[in-house]
Image (cartoon, rainbow, N blue to C red; front, side):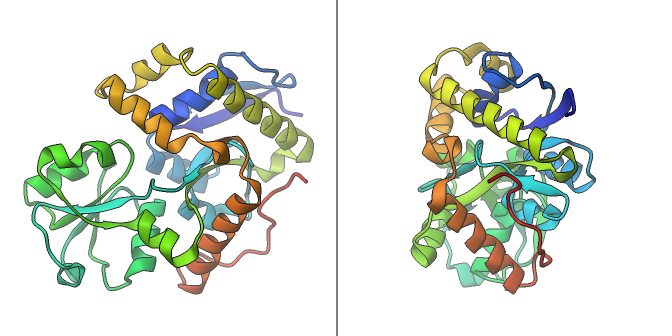
Length: 279
């Protein structure tokens, strides 16, 4: 069993909230130590694609490309209802008018981009940029529309932007399932014993965080300096839920459905690898 593992997660409040107990030794880790690396979600996707992290938060879109090398963990996911990416523009318009127009997306392997491709393959003129630059790009007219995630869904109206599409509403209407955005993966070469220990510690950490919601305030604030406490709290409230503690059958069905649809659309490669390595 490895003693020190690299652990990648984002500086977004939901991740720092959930991982605070684990990286600060507030839960039993089974003798494992974690070297944290905080990066935006698309950087984490790229690091996992390159096989450079032992454990990492990744977009479920990225998971579709790394299933042979990484297994999903049952805790730590961002998955739920009413939390999907939003397509916004400076002026209201019909979605068909965006075909051929430029759309800013928050990364090549983000679930947001995958969902938009599943919604309408004709919306395909993408410009990739960091998620926190998308609203400004729309406002400045550098792109015709933008696909926003994270805290932007709480603030876009204050910038005078208009919601054209809620991909979460679309997904839930299509499938009846919650929307899977991001999950925690572990390198399969770590082995079943180590992965089981990580999964147990992560679940304990999420449970601790949810039962001690104020303890991580300073740590969260250090990594979300430009975000108001109100937006931080709304962010955590939206993205940390029962699915974060344990995916459960419904969460697994949602992830499986997303990956199957992405395979059928030719967006991700097929894989025979099981989604999980632990029972």
